[in-house]
Length: 191
Length: 191
DNA sequence: GGATATCTACCGACTAGTTGGTCGGTCGTC
DNA sequence: GACGACCGACCAACTAGTCGGTAGATATCC
Image 1 (tube, rainbow over the protein chains, first blue to last red):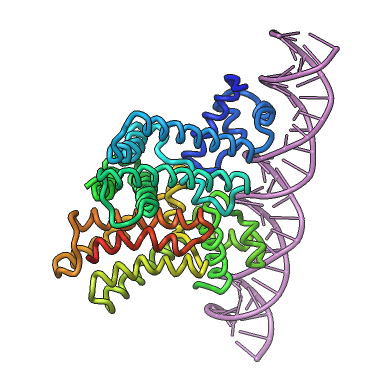
Image 2: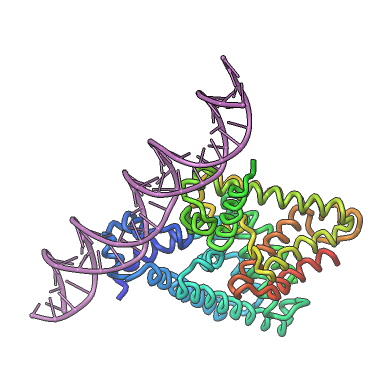
């Protein structure tokens, strides 16, 4: 499993989805970048939906791993949230993967194959649950303050982060703008 | 100018963009809905980019008109902001046009023709400027309170609204969820 | 007023290129 | 000799866009 070509196809597909979304990337695009025939991509991922599902599944795993690592190594809830928000700031700054693929695919949701849509929804649920867990813990330990309950706070935070990504993209990848939008929301939680 | 067919093409294109984005709608789709030949669409809008530009330009005008009407008839800044946020809540609830096309196109920005991208950016600038104007006025009149300056507050509000739209879309068009996310942010401004 | 020219809206038929996907087959490895 | 990785050639369906032409208004000239 996980041959070199397999991984490179996944990497390329992910990069293309980040910049163009699901509907605007093709097997031919990946073929050109990776340097393999189109048939090879179909060999590893029978259909386009399979490929997209694999990309999001890996992305979800990476997110969970990152969140798990944060939970294990960073005891303070305020620092955890700052880590989440700061992660994306760094991504935008590095022009690495300057957008959450799940947020992008969420916008395209009505035109997505159902398996892909299900993965996107699952990511949102997981992400909210994780952050809500952090916030809940932080509120109990007095590291955070909020007028709303943990889940609602998590949803507000995620929505702000996604909206800020959008704003940064419109502004040509402006990481400062992203920070300007997200910081106050974060600060209101971390007090 | 503005024949019936012309307007119906625009309407249909707008509806398709709202649900599918720029890359996932075709002249054939519009042709089928409006009941005219594809060539007719090309007659009114030579290229796909022209069509999209026309859609956003009309959308921008409608936004400006709405904002202008609000400025004229609603003197209180807090009510104006509530009107903006509430407008989208109603759109989601009615499943009318449950997404801001500019926000959707912003996600696809890197894959958009430059003329279309320019329109999207222009809409964001206008929207922020309008809301910042409302907020600035409200702060001076003491109808609003904010730790940040007006423009930053406007950007936070817009980002939250766009993020909440995304969340609502993922949740299957959940207007309550949209309201849950946006209300606290709004309330923090309106005090 | 009647013939003629112009214009706009519209269409069927077409094109070149791209889309996701299939097929039979080759190569190296276990 | 079976198997996984890979490929060239192909396919039907679809993409945006073009072309020549028609029908019906409106204007122009005699």
